[in-house]
Length: 398
Ligand SMILES: [Zn+2]
Image (cartoon, rainbow, N blue to C red; front, side, top):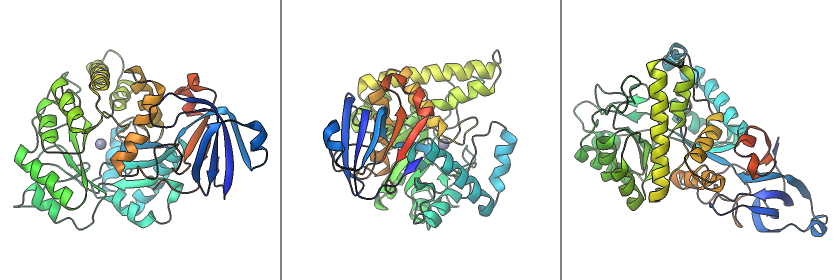
């Protein structure tokens, strides 16, 4: 159920996780006026009777979730041929697919997401056409078509630089201005050889100039990179986030912590592969090892103080829109995050990355009251995320 309250309201909650990463609060009330949180205090059952109230005393409330890496044009279908057949679909066909994916995100408590690109830029077009209508109430930030080097991985979600021009020059000529730039700087992770690195797609000069060009347009750059070399080039280029970052190594993690570069590990992609392949096959074993390796890197990143945001790569094989956010939160907790820390990664860290820190990600006084309520106490999380009682929002998160 989604509620669209009017003016003043007091929400009585059993537990509050506010998105800052601070320890949760017990038995609180949120006073809300015109959709914004006015105050958070200990629950006063005498006082709340004087106002319109919402009783969520049996629930834990957390900020609306943010998925920092999705592909809205692609289904998380496990059948590769079905997924690939979607590639050449027209915008009119894909429009319905995107609308369905947004409904799924909304149902799982996702209030904002960042699209990492598609072959024809359909998600960006959808964002433009539905920006005002706000279908499903989910904020879309879209990259349009991603950039990859000629002849290298990436045509599935983008294009290579224009003929005769380098990456930065090509970015400078973008007509449909996206919300951020997406650059692919390595290949995919191998499922036949554990830890195999692919060469970087762009050299330090090319990538550095491209990130700078994005900044000139007022845009952040997200870089798909796996392996030490490809990740190092992306960090040195000044990119804002490393996507995936499998096998990047401790040294890169240390530099990311220093520079404030955000990491979006998309660990769920490997768990999804381990569900697709039969146990005993090489692909199954390597997907499992890739996942373990990534969870170890996340543990190390927590120690180093790297800012990590939840992103799922939804639309990849077996990675389903909306649901995967809950799964990534569970994986973050298995890597060492507390529930408060994991929620911060799935809310406030994402809000900062998407430029929504004024409107989403935190449940603190002054912020819009955009939250989800799940039955039970914090001990039931993250499993209880699968059973959301209420998504509360007076308006969209951005
Ligand atoms: Zn992706």
